[in-house]
Length: 132
Image 1 (cartoon, one colour):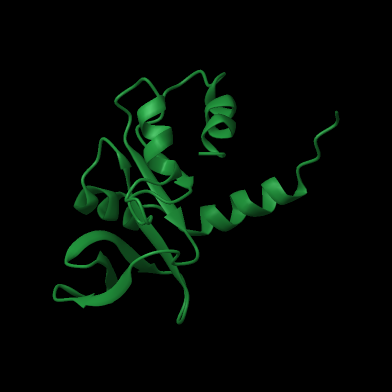
Image 2 (cartoon, rainbow, N blue to C red; image 1 turned 180 degrees about the vertical axis):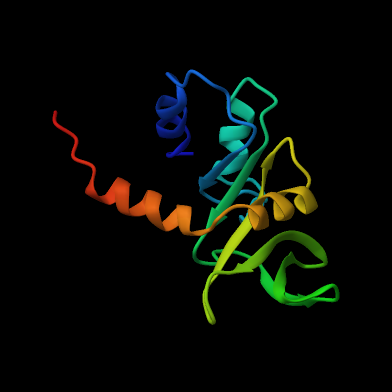
């Protein structure tokens, strides 16, 4: 996985270990059911949960789920591998597990955060200058 080493380098000097990592990479919503978030989670060398998210559905099919009209399940055949969490009327965040977390818990965690933080982080990263 090409992003794993980048993510590991970014967190290398963190003073605190987060309760959970939410990274912009596929987890089980991947043709091999093993995306970058899974790879990152396995290489962390901690038991910290990892949730992967993307803004485009790269794999799987959306199906309505009974308990929520706004959130769709992402399925591979009959296997629930992720969720489509509404971002706006027609756009979604597609989440799936990376490691050390259940899909239901990942959904609860993702729904509990302020999703505007993702946009703020993206803007900050886009404006970040690397002086080499």
